Length: 399
Image 1: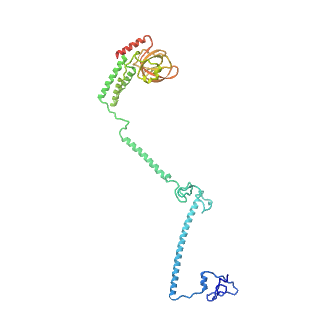
Image 2: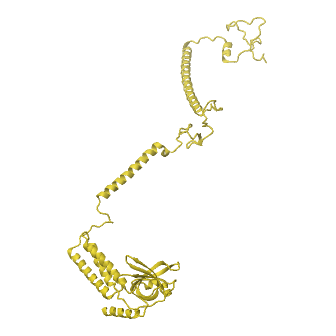
Image 3: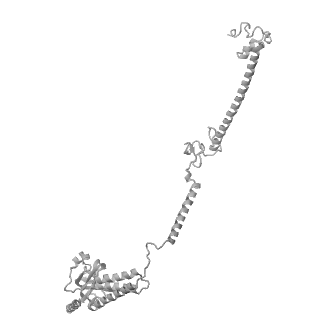
């Protein structure tokens, strides 16, 4: 194989026969032959020195050599620039990697460095809202991509101006409403008092005088029921108060006149024991609403008597039965011979039903009892019937 690598003239040692002509020293006697290099230089060297071209060919050859040298210089300069650019990019990339490694406490892809931060951004934390990589909850920004991890509207810097703005709006609203209330006229709940004219006051005085005449006649003759006469008496007293007031307006005077007129129209003539209904107690209580405003007559036994501002209130057991209580009101318009009501006294009553009330009977039981305003109240004696007939006759004659 080594003999094949030589040329026909190198005698098997890889040298040409013209060693002296190639400028090489002849091989020493007994020296180990060297292997021939198979690069272009050896091939060129093995050919020996080439003669220098002359004429046009020589000139063209020199020009080509100069051109190749220029191209080589330009290529070398471009390679140097590219090498520097790649080196700069590599340095920048390495700086970023080192920065991320220092913040996370983990070297370039290795185990956490001793003494580094416990925040491991490479394996713990919530996913980043942008890149999805883990971010420590205490970090406002992602260490990988720099994205904010909390919505901007949760930032106190954003919330404080909003709260201040809302407070200003509320304060301004209250101030505007307050100013509007001060400058506006009277509200819908108030009304301007219009003074009553002299003519209207004269009508009220005339109406009061008329009502007082009704009441005077009723006191002496007992023409009207005590319930309706009491309503006229109350309306007249209020009208007198309005007439005496210097601040009473037109509306007040008009209302007083209308109240007297309504009470006069509601007057009911009183009946007698012979003309009014004598109801049983149970049917009376079962349909008490239909009896309101109706005159009735009943007999019973006095249980107790209490004096009040509007007269005397007497509790009566109808027919002496404790389960059938009745509350009787006796006022100044009642005709009666019971000047001192005594428990156990049997009486006959006639009056107008006005409603119901809750009472405690003499047996201690709470019950609902009818209320009656008395026109007549007499003790049950031999003379009671004659007195009743005489009084009823006087009332009929007056009517």
